[in-house]
Length: 90
Ligand code: SF4
Ligand code: SF4
Image 1 (cartoon, rainbow, N blue to C red):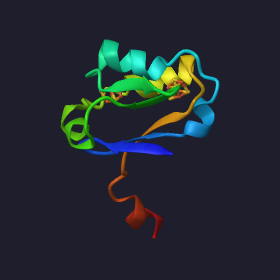
Image 2 (spheres, protein in one colour):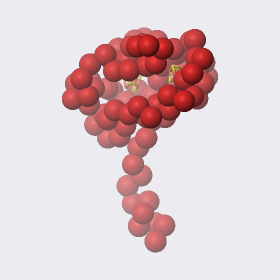
Image 3 (cartoon, rainbow, N blue to C red):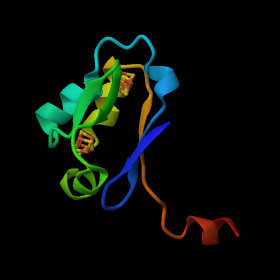
Image 4 (cartoon, rainbow, N blue to C red):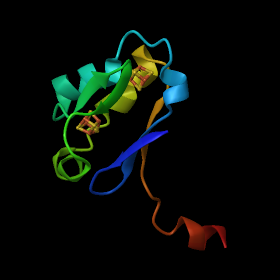
């Protein structure tokens, strides 16, 4: 699992599901709609900036997740904490 944080959550990529992906839709989406902070390295998407820069630069546009879902292999998830969920469950 490859993960990096942004201001309010994190991007989580299950590399096991990326095997064989040829679209790299996540990287293209970030360059088109986001801040162009992803690149391909050895067949996998990785940050092209430091984790600290990613935390500041990522605009949480969700494009990487949407495009991976529709054109990739459903490997990438935007993880956002649901405030109050623990209390609700209790
Ligand atoms: S589009 Fe999805 S499956 Fe393809 S490389 Fe990106 S995260 Fe992996
Ligand atoms: S949420 Fe947007 S800016 Fe952040 S990594 Fe995904 S596509 Fe790039």
